[in-house]
Every structure is written in C-alpha cells, then in structure tokens.
Image 1 (cartoon, one colour):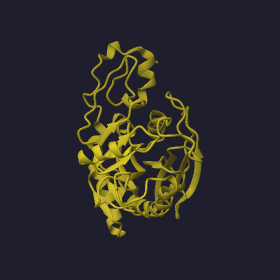
Image 2 (image 1 turned 90 degrees about the vertical axis):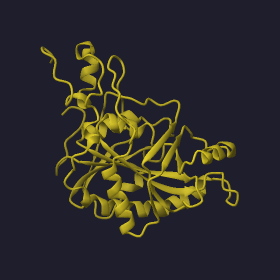
Image 3 (image 1 turned 180 degrees about the vertical axis):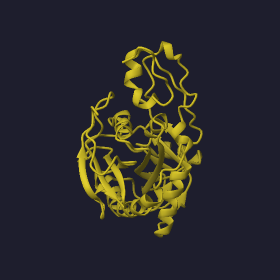
Image 4 (image 1 turned 30 degrees about the horizontal axis):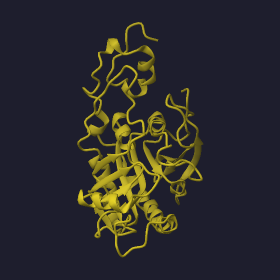
Length: 301
C-alpha cells in the first residue's frame, strides 16, 4: 500500500502517542520503524512498531525525538491519520499535565473522561474543502479503553484518579496565576497542551481514544509550591513515565480481542454533505476515513 510499509507480524491494533521514551519498554520485541506519508503531511516522527504481550503496538513520539515540536507545531491530523493507515483501532495518549486540585498530587495518574478545549491555532478536523461531518463528542473518551487503563493502574498500586476534566491550552507558555485561578473556579482537574485536537481527530477517524495523564506539578495556583519549572516537571515525569510503561504492559493483554465500540462507528450519519457534491479530490483524500460510510461513486477510479 502506498504511503507505508506493512510490518512482519501483522498490523498494529493499538497506538500509543507520547514521549519517545515510552517505546523503550521491557518485553517489546520485533521492533521496526515505519515512515508514513499522509495527505496531511508528515507525522511528528517515524512510528515504532513492536510486539508487546503478544499484541502489535505502534508508538509515536508526539513532539518528535529530541522534543523538537512545540504543542502548536504538532501535525495532529497527520499523526492520527498515520496510525489509522497502519491498522490502529485504539489510541492511548500519554500526556504530562499539571494538577488543578489539591487532591491530585504530582506523581499521580489521571484517566480523564472530559476535555475543555482552549486551543486557538490548530487544525481540528479532517473534514473541509467540500465535505462536512459533525461527529458526536459529548463523551470524548472511549469508556472501555479508559476502564482498562484505570484497572491496570490500580492493579499496580498507582495513585490513580478515574474521571475528571482535562483543560487543553495553546501554550507553549505555562498559565499566568490569574488564568490558573480562573481555571480552578471552573472545577477542572488537570491542565495540559496536547490532547486537543488529538481526541477530536481520533473520533473523526473512528478510533477509540483514552488518555493516561501523568501529573508533574500543581500549575502555578498552589501557594505553597514553587513556580512551575521545566526542570521540576522533567524530574517528576521521569518517575511517572516508568509507571506509565508498567501500566501499558499490564493493559495491553486486556485489549484482546478488540471490542465492538460506538467510537468505531462515529461517522454513522455524521457526513452531512450530499455525496454527489463532494469533490473527487476530497473524496479520495479522505477515503481512508470515509470508505465505511460513503459508497463508491459510479465511474470513480
């Protein structure tokens, strides 16, 4: 298939988006790199595909190796499209976040079930240029996938919080104290810079999506803590990434076989453009995403 090379050992059904260190997991075998080209450009990096606990898993470094891309520079559409093209049906997002509540401490893990999107400059849909789709997003996280992650973390004794709201800001700057206090009044749980529009695009691509949020700091609202620094975040993140790897190792065997899920039928009745009005080039560009719901046009090649 043009655009990627098939891997020996079968296609990956699980995708993990996070830092590059995540795919340095004990027990990962038959590892290969895949470079994928998409109609939306190149993803953040080559995708590492390997076998973990008998499952083929695709790992993508969200910021690129060496952390080259800031949150607004990430090509979220290419990342999600690339994973979809490799056969991925479920995506686990591993993200560093700040805590907005005293009860959620640095080093904890949160499995959020809601998002608030305050990003401003990011392409947030695949559907444009002559095709419009409105997917349901009231429940933005796949409940089944989130359940597996939460149960796996609890089994390992992690300080884990089920549910909660993840606020996604544009960045790359951290919040002002004024902003942080406002967000606290909203009752939000954690704050980060990367899960939007990632989760929206995963839903449009009919992929199950859930987040494992690794708490690194208290943002800047906490009066008894020092101001947020990259050094402090990285120190805490080093420890939580090790835990995240163990959670992934525990969770992956529970993801066999892939369950039937409404996430994977998100485009049912979502495309509102008359099929005959969709430009041929747009139909071709989005065929990977829409072929299940759009019948081929007569005479189309």
